[in-house]
Amino acid sequence: MNTDQTTAGEDRRWRLRHLPVLLAATGGLAAAAALVGALAQGADAALGAALGVGVTAASYTLSTVVLAWADGVNPQLVLPFGLALYAAKFTLLGVVMVGVASTGWAGLIPLCLGIAAGVVVWTGVHIWWITTVHARRSR
Image 1 (cartoon, rainbow, N blue to C red):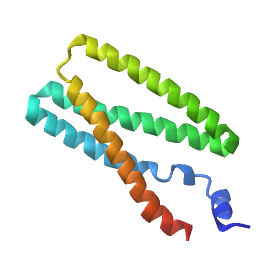
Image 2 (cartoon, rainbow, N blue to C red; image 1 turned 180 degrees about the horizontal axis):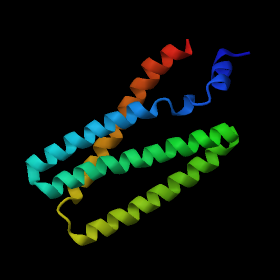
Image 3 (tube, rainbow, N blue to C red; image 1 turned 180 degrees about the vertical axis):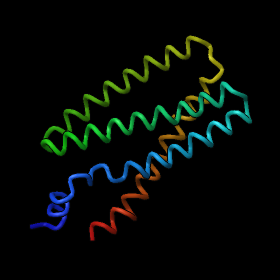
C-alpha cells in the first residue's frame, strides 16, 4: 500500500492541518493592514483593510473546510462542491462589493487592497506549507 494512503487513512485530519498556520498568518496581516490603514487614512481605512483580509480568510477557510469534508466523504464530491462554492462565494462577494461601493464609504479602496493582500499572503503561506512542512511529512 502507498505510504501516503496509509498516512491519510490513519490521520483523518491531514486535510485541515495547514489551516491554523494560514489563519495565524492572515491574522497577523489583518493587524498590520489595520495599522497601515489607520496611519495612512484613519479609522475607515483601518477597518476596511482589516475587513478585506478577514473576507479573504473567511472565504478560503470556508473552501478548505467544505472541500476537506467532501474529500473525506467521497473524493468525487470535491469538484461539484468546489465549483458550487466558488460560484456562490463570488456572487456574494460581487453583491457585497457593489453594495459597499454604492454607499461611498471611505474604506472601500482599503477593503479591496486588504482582500488582495490577503490573497497574496494566504497563497504564499500555503505554498510555503506545501513545499516545506507537508513535503517533510510525506517522506
